[in-house]
Amino acid sequence: MQQALQRSNLVPSGFVVESAYFEGNKAVIAVRALGSVGLCPSCGTVSRRVHSRYRRRVTDLPLSGRIVQLLVIARRFRCDAVTCGRQIFTERFAEGVLAPSARRTARMESIVHHLGLALGGRPAAGFAKRLMLPVSKDTLLRVVRRRSRPPTDPLRVIGIDDWAWRRNHRYASIICNLERRRVVTLLPDREPATAQAWLAAHPAISIVARDRGGGYGKRQQRPCRTRYRSRIVGI
Ligand SMILES: [Zn+2]
Image (cartoon, rainbow, N blue to C red; front, top):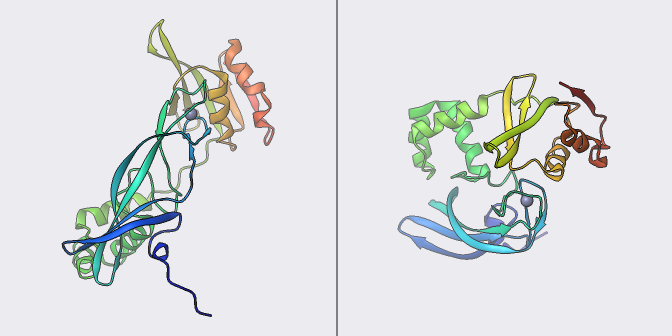
């Protein structure tokens, strides 16, 4: 069965093509995300309030023998959650499409990774150039190293406590992985809603260690964690 070839079929899923033009030996395709909302990475609140737009250039797979650059018109959203410390956030794209701050699309990164694995740094860089994949030998090796790292274990045992941005003035919450003895993240404040949202996004956590103050205990007793059983250890 025949199917019409749309411009959006040429770019990663989730993007809509705004325009396309040649710039020297490159094909530049301006795209924007298909969805109309953004999800705050701190608290998970859905926002439709666009603060501003900015442009990202990322390399995609070549097209008809030309290097392809996507000009991604990305949005910054306002977070309206009262308890969230983040007022403005940049939109995220699907993990298998474009990672935050990435300079290549995920499908391009996958090709770079396999080239690096098969040929090594310098030979892979030479071959990539013939395939119109602009990537240096250092980048190839960096991608191989990064993807070769074992996946991090899911967080299971954490400790949560106060952390001072400025003593006696502004406090945040610090979360540590007690199994690996490493800081996991800093939450922007000490509000129960902020900690609840973070815990809800990490359902593998089964033990939370806290001090005996009342605030952190309340955060664990809310029903946001009904999907799993939590054991709270006072320290
Ligand atoms: Zn937020």
